[in-house]
Image 1 (cartoon, rainbow, N blue to C red):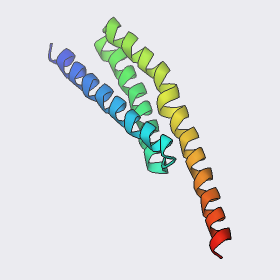
Image 2 (image 1 turned 60 degrees about the vertical axis):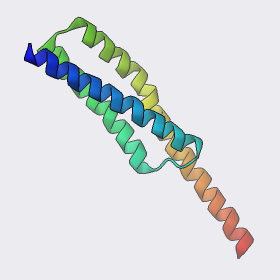
Image 3 (image 1 turned 90 degrees about the horizontal axis):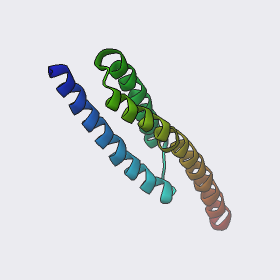
Image 4 (image 1 turned 45 degrees about the vertical axis):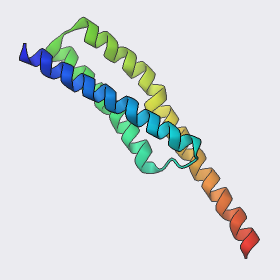
Length: 107
């Protein structure tokens, strides 16, 4: 019984952190202010979700929790891996272009 409660609490905290940081990172992407730290946290969150899924599958064996985690992993591939990488590349390119344009005008 304690194992189920602990896994459920970790799951709820983990999903809450994932959603919160996804919204924060989405704001960084919109502002073209995504840095490597943000991308690393998002990808690390995704990899931690994989690890949690494996541990849950092996030790908990709850079908509902496994289905939710499989869905989270599928969606997380886009929201926590693809979006941060593309956002970081776009932010990096746009920052360099703005810097070069500013350098050309001021010097």
